[in-house]
Length: 133
Image (cartoon, rainbow, N blue to C red; front, side, top):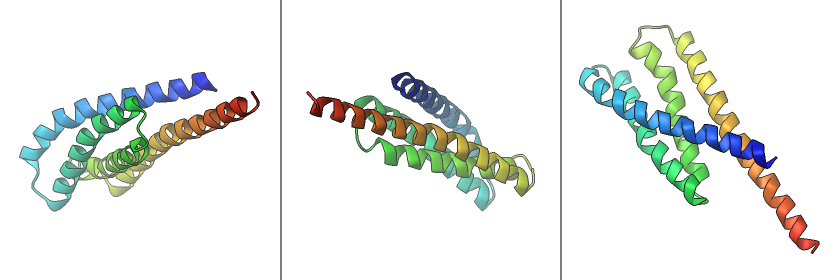
């Protein structure tokens, strides 16, 4: 149980670090290229996850209770960006954007939810173990 929680935490941390790098690197380029309102929404959500990801990572390291809301904001921003980017930048259809967003949502929900569930389960086991002593 503990190993799985650590693996999910490591995967989530790696994803957050990667999204920070790509968000800032690509965010600078798309700001200059944005023309339509939906492109500006995509730019805003990309910057939101680029800034929110290191904050969420920092809260995870500190084991701060505010990490879950921060992770949810980052997941939301990543999902919206994944829906919009293929459509407004790549010229793909909305079905492609929707599939992209669903994939991001499932991955983020799996990592965040799975990690939270495992950590809660470990806390319960620790409290039960300390009560019996």
